[in-house]
Length: 487
Ligand code: MN
Image 1 (spheres, helix red, strand yellow):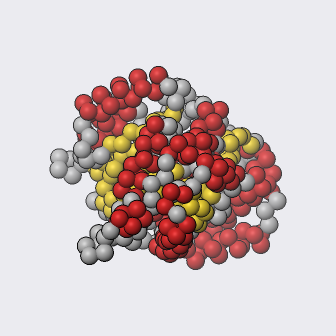
Image 2: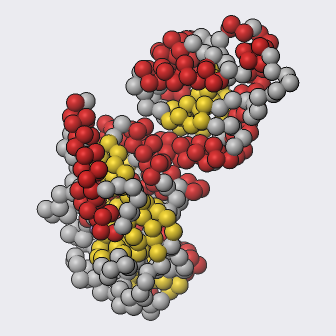
Image 3: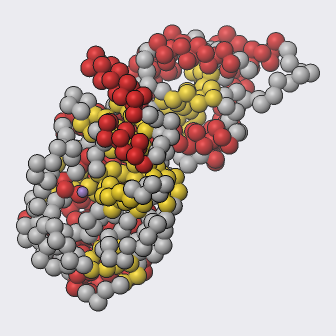
């Protein structure tokens, strides 16, 4: 899917034709420059001088599927009453880019003509007022358009907006229901579609088994070759690897046929299948598909969205589960893994294909899976929960480390991290906020990007960072609960 951002520059007729010509040519120059340094193209659309120009452009943006968001800036003063109708209609993410053409005030040359042409400092305040007055969600980014710090912030905002675009087109394929009796993986699918645009529907496991029966030996040969080129094969059980390939091809065929970018399944419903998809799900995730275990469709869709928000449009984000802690004083860590399904985009080295017995579920044979250690580095974990009446997105900053022990008998991929502000306080905060055991762990999506994503979609956002304390978080949650109930 193509993503483009539209650039609209505010002005008015007051300054005359000459000034407007300069504004127009500079806007063109800036859009071209920004397109080169940002991850997505910036298309200059119009120097807006009338209500009509603004409403027409906004309506076009709303209907254009490739338009992922609007960037506005006021080169000169642009009276904001003429923006009201357009901004009220706007359905795409909006960034108010408070920049100006020149870096320096030209000491010798500055005169009243210069002041009239370059008055973003007050033009952007008029523009900011109307955004605030309309209570319109928007991102304000200030700085010079050639400043690399500004590029980083614009790039991150763009990626959040791309996440919104992917979200609005998200279709999730569910095989089986949620795991019996589990609460946190449940949720209101109607609310999710209203707020996030997700179409979450179910397909029979029996239909997947039928699709598996249609997979040919040649198709399996080709996929196994792909496995062998990406991973080290550390098992003699080729039948198990081939069975996973067959599962992957069948799942992918069904998802692609329906336009689904995410799927979920559960070990409690494998009727007619010999094994839970392990390697199959892991390889699908490496291709950008979302996955959630135990029927967790929320984490599945979020995995696909956060992958799309990451570097190159398929970044280092993965379905994750907090499993167990190392609580030795001074070296407190969380150990994350899943029964099988951890995305190899987290791997620090080349993953190994191994086969092991899986005691949970109705696995007649030992499923093949990728085993590896996660990378070191700063990351986040994100969890979307249904609070009843609204969705809450919880994001926690974490620091991933090389696992401090080899754990040679652990038959799954593993990631080890320290939650912020420290493991125990971080756990207290996470539990207080109601965060799930399932998360999306990401190395290249930041908390700020997730905050922007939540603002764009109008859902609650909770960030647990190095500065969070359990008491400040309790107060924040209490206030937010009241605020959201009033809406
Ligand atoms: Mn799980």
